[in-house]
Length: 322
Image (cartoon, rainbow, N blue to C red; front, side, top):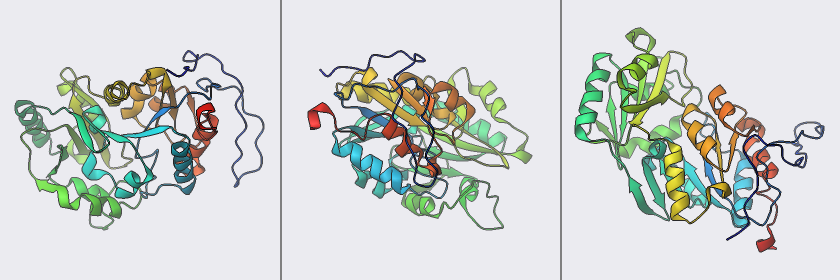
């Protein structure tokens, strides 16, 4: 097995090479950052969140990120998407980059090389109970199953640019709406991997209410969608989070956890950032994500992924690839 990076979370590491972006003047030497590995002999398994990490609010992958991903793959590192989205919500151009697999629905679904390796669904009784409460507070819901997306009320209005809608999600989401259109269904499914919900300000219910009602039996976290007319949340089975999928995939590929890296920006990335060998939060990330990470890169639109990959040594040839 390859040698692992010998570091402990929070311990100082050697000073990384300064990364200067073309759009800015040269930076002063960066201070030592924890969670940077000097051992370039190790091939890494990298887990990447999608929204806010790979894709910006306009559903675009920065060109610097595309180049960094391609270079890391060229050097033999493995890439896995780790997201609250399911397969139906993943753009083909992301798969075309060369991702080995997908951890979806906040850890409930896993796929490697086109084969499903785990698929955990909440049972019908639980789905019915949750749906009844969401209906009582008039929540907009998107129920996510292995293959389909079930709508309740006006959830997708959040993404539509019409001035007559209740849009509150920043950016251009037209590509997302086009991507998911073939998989949309109406109503509540019998089972589901995940529920994404929106509580409008006028409905009177809050995320705290949902957590109080279900938090002892389910995982309920703030949603990763930026908004200003209420709150979004994500609900999965108790104990389900992205780190669960990360561990399963690493085990499946016979990769030690210390040889894994995770990049994310939201509340649903916290456990993943903590569990991975190295956790990096995006500069545009939430306070919770930044606190959970070993260090913070620049924002997604300031070449954050490329900056992180360079500082992590993912863009330099390893001993095995030279």
